[in-house]
Length: 165
Image (cartoon, rainbow, N blue to C red; front, side, top):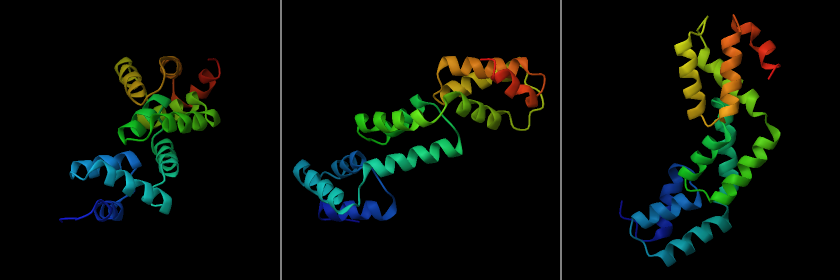
């Protein structure tokens, strides 16, 4: 698929999926297009509305939170991995988490993790702590969730223990 111009290559990329301006620059540079041509191409695509980093990042964050809740660190990591501007990523994550409670998200994630388990063994609690940590939750939040799970005799009691922290 020999695209002769950066714009043709960019439109071909966008025909398959949305990408950030950083991803587009990276993909075009991998195809050995000159930097000046890449800059002009990305600028035109942004003007035309084909690339909108703010809207795409917000959509990615919303999808991440709704499918499998995660902490701020994980959200930032995922956006930066997709080559979004780090200031934009931080701003959007901060705005999102201003409206959300991290503990609520962590308990929701823990419920997904514990689905199908009637009782959590100490090994399960260790695994849950590691899993929540990898999902980007803070140490304090992980501690709160694991402690609530360890003190509850069954999962219906967890909200009672959660309120104590």
